Length: 334
Ligand code: COA
Image (cartoon, rainbow, N blue to C red; front, side, top):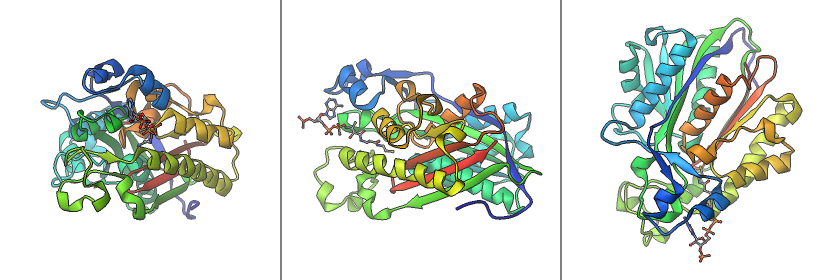
């Protein structure tokens, strides 16, 4: 939907990101399961991904560090924030939320804090919700994070899922702005819960659908029907971008960047080709970071932001899809 009328706009005051130091290359994976670098690069575009050292890193630390970086870039302190939203699906604990722990560590005592669970769409969902809350006039400065430690929910004995995912978090600090045309001028949040079993993370045997009872991936780890998800992603990705362009009457030429979820290079390229998006408008880092779920779009945003690829005066688009199934897009005047 397009922006509701109102006098408040939203400015991205700064961005940040965090990734673990440890690299897991395709050759490293080939030592763990029956796969190889050539197959992975050809089918996914991924060469390596980052993975946490579970003794000291995880979803909470990645989101905390990404937000700290975004606050530094904004010249703000945690105590300036009145709300923190974290998009994630790999929370260490269901209570407290990751957002509460992040708020506690960045000094945002008293700020509201909650997690958004929309899998790989988590960061775009959270940015859209934050923009709407600022436009409502109820919040002025929101720290938005998206981040997952996917390595904590991957069965590395199994090759179909383990090759895709990595760990990362991205963050942005959003502040109220006097220009109502600044911020998210169009957004979409979507889901279709009918096909949830194409990509899911079962904790208990009761949750596993009959048709998936023989799945060798152990409980507590991510399961995926790769071909089904691929079909869904290619179609939905294209459709969501086309709907955003149509609603805003923009063409690909009008955009500075389309910052898209890094799921598979073939999914990204297929959408680019069908929509006619030139290569220089679609940021890609999947080769180095794999699919970091809710971390992916936030990490890309931070990298394009710091590289000066999203200048004021040209809108940019963020788009993601993921488990649920979920999808989301946002067109932003920065
Ligand atoms: N290494 C080597 N071979 C592998 C392999 C691996 N890691 N994984 C599967 N294979 C084999 C299969 O066993 C199969 O062999 P067979 O033909 O002898 O049966 C063959 O490769 C093809 O498998 P398939 O599953 O059809 O491959 P694919 O082309 O669909 O690629 C994915 C698999 C997972 C890369 C692809 O389906 C995909 O990217 N799906 C979307 C995933 C996604 O984006 N998820 C996140 C959404 S947010």
